[in-house]
Image (cartoon, rainbow, N blue to C red; front, side):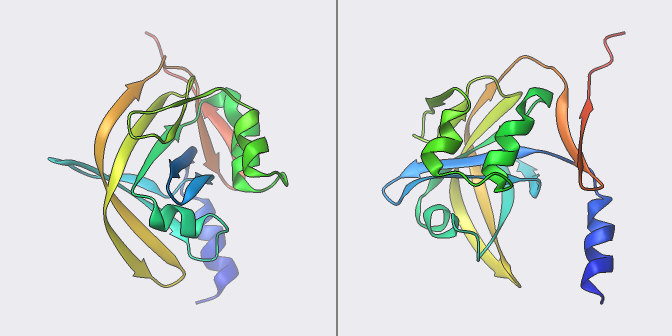
Amino acid sequence: MDIQIFRQAMSMLGAAVNVVTTDGNHGKGGFTATAVCSVSDSPATILFCLNKKNAQFDIFFNNETFAVNVLSSEHEQVSNYFGGSIAASIEDRFSIAEWKKGYNKAPVLTNSLCSIECKIVERKFLATHCIFFCEVTYIHIGNPSANLLYFNRKYHNISLDRH
């Protein structure tokens, strides 16, 4: 399989943009992710994928809790900082938005569409990535607004139709 063709095909899978965060004994971290999805509602379980070469990998692998912060259209800069397109330290990444400590200690973006706090229950390695399966422990619901999506290597916004 040609890697470039595969990557082009994957860019056609539009996805919500999230910042996954953690803070614990192994440090504070965060990264931008579109590879986040629901697994089950009983018990409430989600997954996210993280490349083993990501600078944040050891922090996430060793901390037990995290938060998935679903970004709105106003969070493009947050996504860029946490996604690495802007060179920034962890402190600088967290300084560009307002965060609070969640129930499980992970940073929660105060004006996200929602933040889903979780604890890791299983990790699976496959190829270049680790898949983290996580039980949901708490959900913060924000005000519905335009969702930040990533499609064809560009940001897009989708708003609720209020009819």
